[in-house]
Length: 347
Image 1 (tube, rainbow, N blue to C red):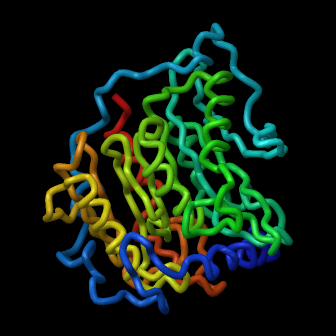
Image 2 (tube, rainbow, N blue to C red):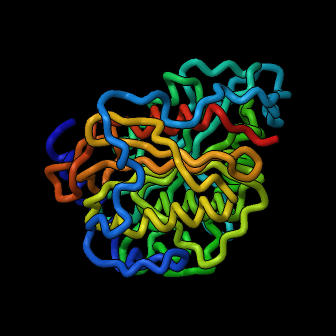
């Protein structure tokens, strides 16, 4: 990537944090600098070399049957393909980036992952395409045959593009970004052949907070979520069903302290009635994952930790030199989340 493009991404991502990410209503965290806190190391304590198996608890791809979307009745129509799309929602024209996997077969229902960007300065252009570059999730979608949608947030009066994810980060806490995500899915499911039992969400920073919100409020639509560099910013969280979460946090994240992510994860373990003791299910270099099973409706809670990791997407675009901390290459968030996602589908 050209040097000016890297600078663009660095300056853009500088807006992912901000004063809104200063405390966790569910954990009672105290904020502060990106240290590991007294509870750090939960997901990497076991140590020991090499990969310790898959990132989740095993069980293979979910055997639940597909739920074809309305687009599957189009007789094989391929849809209009990848690119930027607009739709009117709440009286405002909004947009999203749609990526159709190269292997898409319009006669076979395909999974889909929503990929939400972080709080981003609008002066550096739309955040959704930058999230594509940072996460490299489109490439994973091509390799595994799932759709990726990168939605575009709204620009607040301070010039940052955000999502209303509770504590973080929109200035208008009444803005219906959950409804906007629903409207996107409604549109794409009507045109393409998707498996509505295998809709997932992921996101970085403010986008990770948005993934937590969807888990709290839309567990009937999303089979699992994967927040990166985030914690749950919702003061009320009462999911309708057990929903799987696989979270990624660095112990030296300068914007989202690890000592807030850990208790937020513990809240999910308690909320879903999971077994109290996790199992280490991944270990490689600086990265490890712990998995809690026995959760409501067969869900899993997975916390993946990068020792010394920053406000970055594991295995994604390396922004280490731009002030956001280490971007590990010892773990691919895309590989881990997809392996976990494949085990979970809506009933």
